[in-house]
Image (cartoon, rainbow, N blue to C red; front, side, top):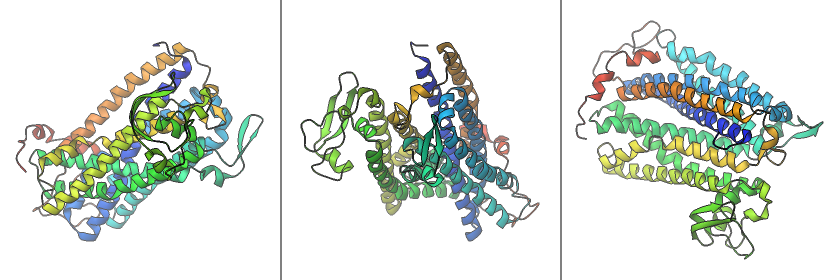
Length: 478
């Protein structure tokens, strides 16, 4: 297929399926915590706007959660089908970690998800809030175990190699390996930011169409507060993560920076843009800022960072890919910080919900968090190459003995099925977003409790009526 070998096709297949999958857990993590906050604020303040937003976003959460579970099942099977040698080599580490994720996180989420989605009329307020919090905690526990497994592959610790297999000797060192704390924080915060911009874009879309009500304003305001506070924190966590990567995976940093040679000595410049050429061993058409690379990564004005030529050709990651994937991630992060600061200025001036240029930018930034997550994972995984377990097992030694034809057929099948199945699911989610929250302002509402009438919490109930009317609504003025 396109002149690619079975190994390359296996890597593309895994990258394709995991890229689809990561979108759903990222939104699930953020929305679960958002729902817990909304219900907690409703219980504390009694303001109906928080309850209305809870019902609205719980439907989207349910659809997203289901697609995340389905897409995640494929990943586990691929370890055995396409990467059987890796499973045989390191399965004694990765297998238990993924099992712990199922036993602690998935069971916790599944156990309370039904109460969260369908128990609004059947259980008391306190128990329902407890179920929502447990689902939110479950998503974070799931993140913990998945990142522990992947981080061990990046910075392996706590093991011995016996008879050609990895045998864990210290589970604390395995789990809390050197890169794990940084990568866990980076991913969790990224999920919160991705959700914030998804929520903010949804509100901006309604505001631009003239649907200005307390629920829309509240979710837009909360999203912008999240961008203002959390985006700068993510930048600081990213800086710490970069320093950790420099210590443990210097070749990855050299590839990210597109830096090839330290023969001239002196500090390393920061290359803003360029085209790394793996064959010519240089970064062409580069635009650089002197000394800044050393200042950012070494916190020094004199000490250089590692160069790609310091490593054998066969041990170098593909700089062309990670150079640009990192810059996409970092550039989107800077835009998020800018939007947060702009929102603060508009809030102070009283124009947060009326400035159309800002609302349009917030709308276009809706997928930015997910794009940044994808770019970050491409940087992480491609930057680890040619190792599947860094410094221990090469990717070429991990792949199963499949033919190019087999890998080509299965890859095409995945592309067709994923775009068909998840395309429908994503389309349904967008229909829910377009409908917007149903507000109860000015209506007589019940106080809650078992059997009380409420807005349905079932995902499919959101599209029974009113969807077509949304498309014909006038834009209005804000």
